[in-house]
Image (cartoon, rainbow, N blue to C red; front, side):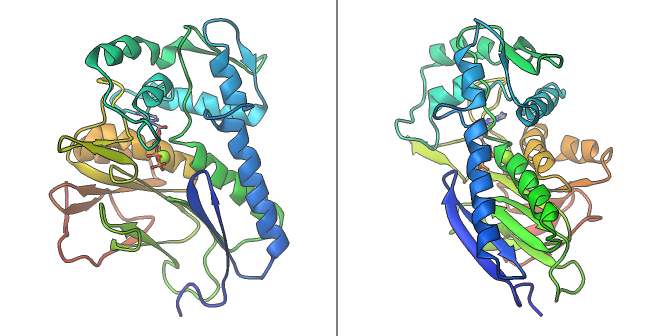
Length: 323
Ligand code: ADP
Ligand code: MG
């Protein structure tokens, strides 16, 4: 039986993305509460409008530390640790560059090289000081900005999972526009259970390269086709290389991460982008509960391993390969 058998779907548009909640008991009230929770959590983290705790930190850059709530502090601490992993390109201090490029927003442009050179010294994650005792965050220099855009959805997906469990729900799926978190497995499923599509780059959202089958796992994809602009035949996408200040330029079109926590999936998609396939797969050998699917410009699909999921290729242009 398909996983959808007997499911109830609730949808909304939030954080600029379509959000889907699948339950196996009809519960309009619960769905409404989940959407409210997503909104509240987003308001804590956004860097695009006040008041948010992260905005307050950014506005005090170079002046003073700002104390934040425990969950936000813990997320920032996690983001800082991930930003210090050698060879990865995840960097939560990337804010000044994201704001300058405005990729995915109105007014995007290619900044003059001088501007980029001037901003690079403002994105050093070591210049973000954390103090556990006061749960406070201090950006050492004026102009520094935290950006949690790469991990906000993952963190929120995990909080939704916690909330659903508290409410006694053990079988559900939440899709926050590219971040899928699954609870348990669907009641009528066989084998791996939930089936999550791997989107075909630069095709319509419904067009898939293949499918990923998982149970009780998060599936997160980050792709160069998500938000980008074209100028003079050049493709500028929204994942920036902290080393150069320009969009990452390598053989990858997308990275999908299967993990227990969605926030890990979010961190690893960006980290692995920077590492590439060889080094990325090597790194993943040290993690038993995180795996990745890489899609390359030359139409290859590479799985780091397949302990946590099953992958079925359906597109004829792509082929399975090993690194
Ligand atoms: P989406 O799921 O919206 O496609 P991603 O999870 O791929 O987004 O994250 C992209 C966002 O992360 C960017 O829009 C920007 O806010 C931020 N970002 C860009 N480059 C980096 C980076 N190197 N490290 C951390 N965050 C980044
Ligand atoms: Mg992400």
